[in-house]
Length: 98
Ligand code: HEC
Image (cartoon, rainbow, N blue to C red; front, side, top):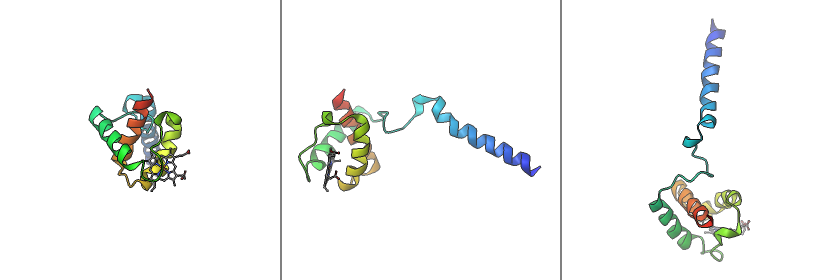
């Protein structure tokens, strides 16, 4: 009896963990742009104000969007960005590259 409850729970967990992969439209990974045009404009402002303080303002086209994920992960805390600002700046950078 206990065992079947365990298996039932396990399959619910497995189903739940598989769901995002089967519906890419709802994916909220760093790779997918989730920001509105207004947020990207904010991202540009934050980028220009915060990212040129310690070094020259970086060139968005100088790195791939995958490299930018890693760069932003190390630079966002340096620039004291919130998670939302981190996302907007990233989406701005990626939007420049297209
Ligand atoms: C508090 C200072 C500081 C701020 C603010 C800052 N950076 Fe940096 N950044 C550094 C330092 C120091 C390095 C070089 C050492 C390193 O890579 O950690 C660096 C390196 C970089 C590099 C080169 C990385 C590479 O792999 O070639 C890029 C690109 C970059 N920063 C982008 C940004 C962006 C975008 C922002 C704004 C979100 C930002 N930085 C804000 C200090 C800062």
